[in-house]
Image (tube, rainbow, N blue to C red; front, side):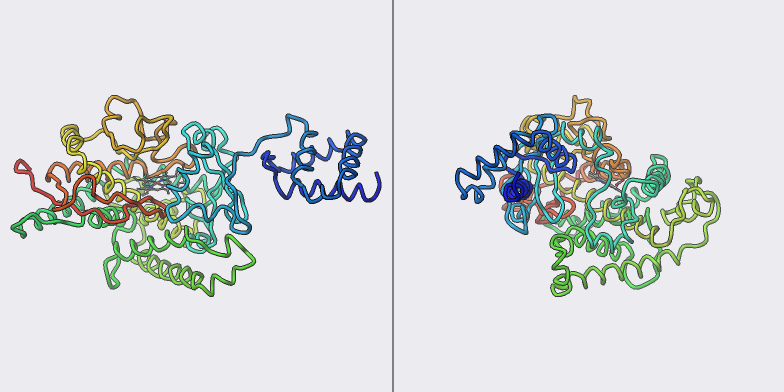
Length: 497
Ligand code: HEM
């Protein structure tokens, strides 16, 4: 092979790699090496082919796709795994522009067009989007060891002490021990039951507040139920996690709620550092880096003070009667050397922050969407009140699995054996596999108790002038698809309440 032909062959291989071909060659190192081996084995044939190709027309060099396609024909079949389909992308930003401000909807549209497994280019690493029950189980259960960690943004690294919480830590000893701490100690069924007094007190306060506003207003009063539910979820998590010990200015639950929401927002926000590392300095120019540093500092200061106010643990971590909060339990277990890790103060703070980030908006949104759906469908509300409840509902949208997937049809669960603990591929509101939500029991106990009370004590109506069709059901997408406009409803105390 002449020098020029060798150069051209190399160029063709380079172009093949660069363009990644519409044929969707998955360019793993093993595919590349198998390609080169194959090239070597069929060298005379390949040389001949390339010579003929280039002899035909020098312009062929400007047609890399054609050359690449021809080369692809020589790849041995078994080492040619097909990559998932990928929507066309733009230089630098890849598919970012296709996600719009409502990525969950945009992804649904892309899934309808390209199928249940899509490859997107967002930032330096490819992102695979899975949207069918079968694929979700494949990724989270069957192939779980290939997907050991969640992607971690730069902001997450700063806010969660280098990703030493549970959500962002990679699979390994640290994650395993932290997970055990959460599943067996902080969020176990027994511990969740022991927090029933918190649920009773907080839901009781909410019901009393709504009753008071009904009594104060002669006419029917419209309340911002969305805000009240967010406050409820935040107060319950706050008391369980921090015990609301805080002698500084302001309400501990509100301060932590606001800070954790900010942290969650920043964690999922666009930053140049993550997507175009060469432009990371722009994060300082836009103020993003400053906002992350400010929130991280405020979280640190607040949690330091809350932790300082906890007394040196006494008694036993297993004693459920002492009304211990998560801070007490963690330090008690650490004292008894039962965590299997030397958790630093920063690690503990990162784990506490997880509980707020993962445990407040999720539960609040679940309740808010449920109320919005129920009030639009009085027949479902009636049945719900009659049944008071089997388990929590958030809808999944795969039309292959569900009849009328976008409709609120709670009766679909009535005679179904589906559970929410990850045992079914079709229904997994708390995720599946190794990283399944450890807070499922906590959330279910809270959502069921709060919803049962709200529906038992009050009948709920739409505000004057709003109908089931005109009630705004649009969502925003942060980490949780929340209602864009908080739900406002009219509570009518039940006479038998
Ligand atoms: C209705 C309420 C909730 C829903 C729908 C929900 C849903 C989820 C989902 C889908 C995941 C990801 C699972 C996966 O990757 O396969 C998750 C993870 C997680 N959730 Fe929840 N969650 C809820 C409430 C809670 C609560 C109340 C807590 C704690 C108090 C909590 C703590 C966590 C944590 C720490 C993780 C990360 C687990 C890990 O990576 O190992 N969640 N949740």
